[in-house]
Image (cartoon, rainbow, N blue to C red; front, top):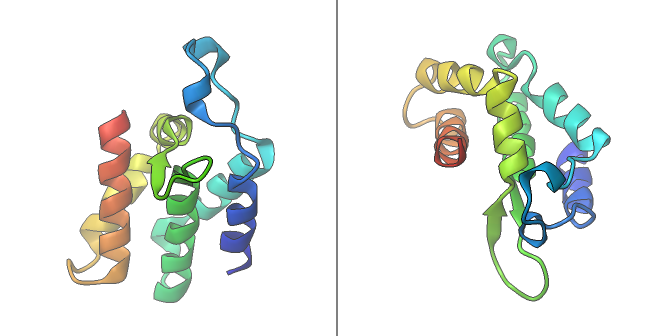
Length: 122
């Protein structure tokens, strides 16, 4: 719960991707966010506590989906985070986690949604 709330705060400080046109100049993901993202994604398959697993997936999902800037409602995909998750192999972990859980479980649904979002970007 603490990490999710911390990510809510951090999401207010992350620069908006749409303001940069050149991929080489894309805003970097803050180091603390990368650390939390990797910590939440590391060892997902070994975690047997469904509540803890769901919370870790919520943290990953919140980092992946950032709030729109200004007065706009809704969220947008943080493409840098999606690419990072795919590049370091956590997409495969999420796919395995999705396959391992029953289709009606919250864990399965969260993992499926995260995988779908990453696949759209990557």
